[in-house]
Length: 541
Ligand SMILES: [Zn+2]
Image (cartoon, rainbow, N blue to C red; front, side, top):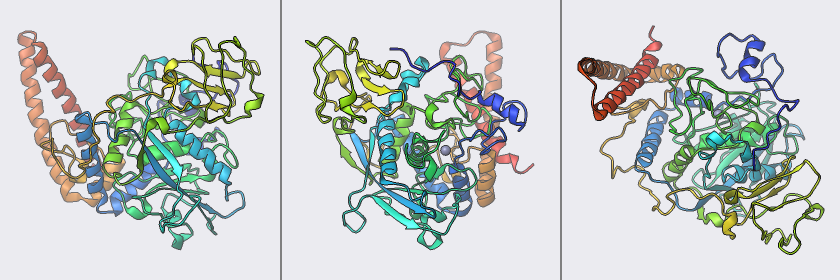
């Protein structure tokens, strides 16, 4: 069944490029995060990079911590290891920090957010159908589920929710919401819980996260109350719970999909299966939206790690899942418990089952509407439903059978017991889990070293992926930055010489395919090192 995007929807926003030029923030493709613009369209604004930069400047162990995380991730990815077997259930504590009654959000609003996470991270979200065919094989199940904690740090029963009245009218990304002494609530131990703070944020900020490798007492994510969950104070266009999905992506080591280099084409999110992309996309872009010569399919703007509106972000990729699993295997290895994926999100009927109508051959269509046992016996390819015409829709891809209506409120998830309704299986799940974080069994050298840069051999900058970050780091570690610049000059000079020789050889006659491939690798390496060199030396000019 075809994707069910409605063409010509009246509320569709213009492409972000138009939006930018209309708001007069500069010509060309300047699409930086700027909070709200004078176009009056609210835009996604995430504070994770600002936190990252602050920690680089102020937390001496942070750069090393990030290097360790990336080394582990790199090694696992290279070895084709897929992380934990089965699914991982992560206990969540939601700290509600409120000044007004509205900010003291309801339990229902909190549960609606947990539901969204369990759909999004298991690729069970109904709107996965919005993924264009060009990217559909890349969408993947992270095998992570979330559950409100039932036991507090002292071993007492809990709802998984803490509430505190505060006098702070708007928190910023300075982490003060994470401490009782500054009007917030102290974190629960990060090796047992994912901490989510929900509060009023100022400055148009929707939320922020701390990457793995940072300080323990600020570990977790912070979300604006009106961008949390799907009901209560949740407000469009950020009322589908995707801000939390995005921020937990960061918390599990995902970078923004455009590579955090402003609008340039040299940044990377360290994920191989996401296209190279210029800057962030906003609103609800129309496919394809090209940048950095990434046509014909263009940006993967429907990814949770872009800046589009909630209704437009619908997927993680296999490469992103690998990074998240590497985070669970490494810096977050003590967290969560293994559960069988088949027993992950249970079958759910979020609607009044009595109001549903089905039309089919009574002799072949069978189902019981006990939510715990709902089964369909029919050919998924021909199963038909009759309901309010025009609103009830379903996807009958036999691998991922899901039902939903246009409002997004009706959802069916299978329980995995019927092979036709089998959830997506990630490849390589039989491989043993890998847990040697900190060791180095299989790889002779790490590409990422202190301060965020590695030696040669395909190393890439990871911490300092923007000139802005590079300046912060170089300022904090001038000696290391100077040493790296000298090393880069040597490497670039050597590569330049080798490439010149290759050019001479090419002039004499065509190279063998093997040699040609080597030359191409060297050229790519040269470009990478040059980009790193430029970032590091930019602040000095
Ligand atoms: Zn972000």
